[in-house]
Image 1 (cartoon, rainbow, N blue to C red):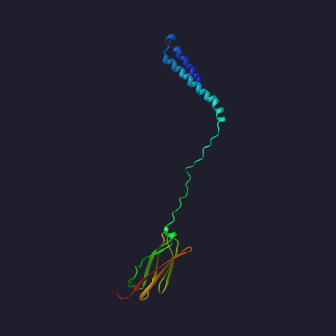
Image 2 (cartoon, rainbow, N blue to C red; image 1 turned 135 degrees about the vertical axis):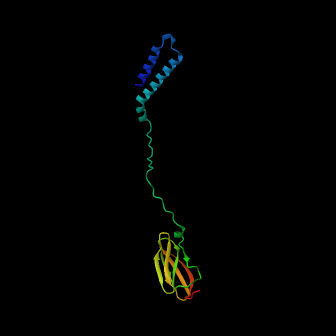
Length: 167
């Protein structure tokens, strides 16, 4: 089809101009058009047979729409299981017989707060924080906080003093 069109264009140019007055540019443009048409026709007719003789190339399938799960980073506190008592401060003096003991450890840990009279058992929240109340006796109170995370254990001790006197 392309070749027929190129040949038709060449003859149309030849017929449109007087025989002896066809300029060289128009003649070469017609020849170039004819050449391009013949090349395209050859590609269309011979191309499929030529493609069969070439080695088969496969392109790997790439998908961009699949969402890969992102691994959650492991916190250092979970690797090196430790415990920190935020409250009360060491050697604090209290004037009430109950006290809130709070701190942090590895998340999903079991925490036991041992006071002189009673104990408090709890699980940490999602951030690894804990808080529990204990009862104090007058004078020195040693508080032992132990955290259990799997097979790992961490312990910290603090001392507070209770006096019912107002100061």
